[in-house]
Every structure is written in C-alpha cells, then in structure tokens.
Image (tube, rainbow, N blue to C red):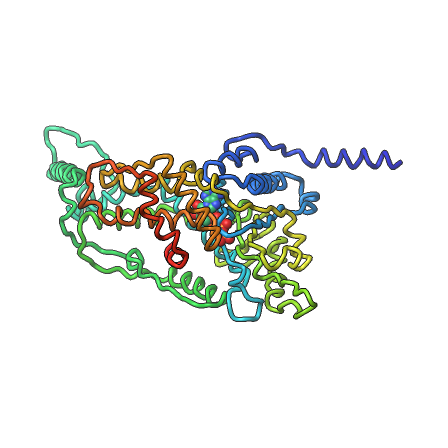
Length: 490
Ligand SMILES: Nc1ncnc2c1ncn2[C@@H]1O[C@H](COP(=O)(O)OP(=O)(O)OP(=O)(O)O)[C@@H](O)[C@H]1O
Ligand SMILES: [Mg+2]
C-alpha cells in the first residue's frame, strides 16, 4: 500500500514538473554564471557558486507547478566576510549579467514600523523604480532612431514653417509630383517647398548649423522642471509619487525658449521618445521583471543582529529585532504597494552580507535565519590575489589607469615586478594598519600615480611612461615605513 502511494507521489511529481528548462542564451547555467563572474572577481569560488546556484534555482522554482512551488524555499544567501573582499561586487556583477533589477540597501538604515526612518518595504519600491528606469531606457533605445527622424522633421518645421494649405501642412507629403503640362500653382508651390526642405535637411545633417540659434516651444517638464519631494519617511516618498502622478496628469505648460539647433535636436528627440514609449506597458514589464528576476542586496545585516553578550548582559535591541521582523514577510514573499502598483516579492532574490565580527548569523532571529538558508564565507585576500586583481579582471585597476592616460596620448607601462611590489605593499599595509581588502589597492594606486596624473598633459605628452619596481619603492616606501603617515594617507 505504502509502495503504491509512493509511486503515486512520484507520478504526481513527474507530471507536475513538465515545464522543462532548456539551455538557452537567455538563462545562464550555474557554470556559465561562475565563468562570467570569473572575468571580474578573483577567487571567492564558494560565493560565486552559491549565487550562481541561487539564481538558477529561482528559475527552476518558477518552472515547478504551482502546488509544489510554494513549498520550495527561495535560496536566499548570507555572504559572510571581512570588508573589501568582493561581497558587494559579486552581487552587483550577478545582477548585471542577469540583466536584473538590483538595489543595494544598508540594513542599519531601516527602522521598525512606527519609528521615524526608512521602512523595509522601501527596498521593494526602490527596486521597482530601478526596474522602471531600466525598461524605459531599453525601450528608448528601441525607438531612438525613429525619434531622431521625427525630431528632424520638427526641426525642419521650425526652420521652414509649413505654409498653410501646402503639401507639408497635410499628410500627403509622399505624394509624387505629377509632371503634367499644366502643373497648377499649388503643385508648383509643393515642389518648391519640397526642394527647400530637402536643401535644409542636407544642411542640418551636414552639422554646419549646429550652433545656430532658434526659438522653439518646450513643454516645461522636458527641461527637468519636475517637482521633487524629499522626505525621510516612506509615507512621504509615496506622497511624492502620488503628487508626481497628479502633476503629470495636468496639462503641460509650454513656453518659448531660444536654443541652439544642437540643443533643440536633443530636446525634440527626448520629447519624441517620450511620445513613442507606452509607459503603461513599461510599468507592466518592469513589475514583472522585479517579480521574476529582482535582486535585493542587504548590506550590513550583522548590524541588525543582536550580539549575544557573554554574561547574559542586555537583551536583544527592540528596534533591531523589529527590523528583522519587518523583513520576514518581504523575504518570505508578500505584496508590497509601490507607486507602480502591487509587487509580489515571492521570487525576489535576497542576498545579505556582513562581516559578522561581533554578532553571528545565529544571533539573527530564528525565523529570519530560516529565510537565508545559504551561508557562504568569503576569504581574506592574499598578496597573490592582489596581483591578479590588479591585472586580470576586465575592469582591473591597471587597465583603468592605462585607459585614462591613453586619452592624453600617454602610454603607461607597468613592469611585472612593479605590480608584484604594489601587491606586496597592499598586503603589508593591510596587515599593519587595517585590513580593508582590495580597497587598499585603490589608495595605493592613487598615491603612486598622483604626481603623474597632475603633471600630464603639460609634461610627458605623447610618450611612454614605465613604472618599475624602483619607482614604486621611491614613491611609497616613505609612507609605508611611517605608520602614522600610512594611517592617514593609505
Ligand atoms: N575578489 C575580488 N576580485 C576583484 N576585485 C575585488 C575583489 N574583492 C574586492 N574587489 C574590489 O574591491 C572593491 C571593494 O569590494 P566590495 O565592494 O565587493 O567589498 P565588500 O566585500 O562588499 O566590503 P564591505 O563589507 O565593506 O561592503 C571593489 O571595487 C572591487 O572591485
Ligand atoms: Mg559591500
């Protein structure tokens, strides 16, 4: 009997997971995700694997049938590790390569419901805003060319106002001019009009007229005159959104302004883009994007965990625990009201992070611990890691500096032993002063190259500059050996 039940269960399971995932370019497999992350982040393989699995599991979960789906816990993650080792960077890159809406929030900025400060739901409102602007700029990109053509037409209308009753006043501008013997006056006028528009268009496109001033009518919000409401509280933000919605319903004030043709083209293109985009569709798509692929990064989660004081000291801080309780429904899955409508958080991926020096993940309230089942520890970075971070990532610091100076016609070359030395110094200062992880590389590089950055372009234009080990030591040894100095400078 029991056996029969089991086969039945299995059948049910098999029948219910019919929507099989196929390997496609749209959704990366975990190993693809890790290898993409490898291009930017050195080491931290455990963390990369965990986020890759979590991202894929969300997709898998979305494909499971309804009844079972709700039973499957989301794969929220806590990244544990010292400062500057890549926690935020991993989450940010993950979001970027998944083309997912992403917000980073500091857990310590939130306060319990009923207290003054940001309420936790604001993270979902921010995420939705972010998604709306993502989708809007995608859509703008799609209609950009069309908008440019329409803007050009409007520029021509300003430069050569259409004569009432002429061809360009009506819709039939594409009509061929029939060259019968008795061409009417109107036809002639059309031909002349068309000719001058063509001429003008040619001049416009040649770029010779860009600085010419024209007068044009602008709607006031295309000049960025939108009213802004600032407020510390969530309620105020919502009020701001409401006000803006109300305002956008009002007839737009239009006024005349003198601008150059270059400016006019930009403004007209913006207006045309706005007209071509269907904002309702944008919002619908954005909300879907948040619900299916949003990622919230909650930084400093350890700051809202109550550290257990050894000798049974003070109990957990009420407000911090309150924030954790407020977080529960959002992380678990609930509806959050935003100015773009209700947003379901069931499939939003939450990645929390913290150093957990004082508090431990086990100091979080049990319910919240359960919502973040995956814990990954990130390791401190070593000298060898620093060497790789300086050179390998697509956005490696050395590549950045080279690119900066390339714009001045200067070629910057680092010898290998110079890079080894910089990595060694970074590791040394991290040990002697304070371990700030890879951020140390930034401070060291700015110090090393400061003079150079200042003296270019007057000196050294169009030449090659070599940075070698002795130069690194010349510039930095004095600072490193003087502990006080390095505390302030590096
Ligand atoms: N493993 C790494 N590989 C490449 N770059 C890294 C790595 N770790 C850190 N970095 C660089 O160091 C900087 C800081 O890293 P990140 O913001 O991820 O720190 P964090 O771990 O979130 O620290 P915090 O706890 O202070 O928030 C980033 O700009 C990133 O480019
Ligand atoms: Mg961080």
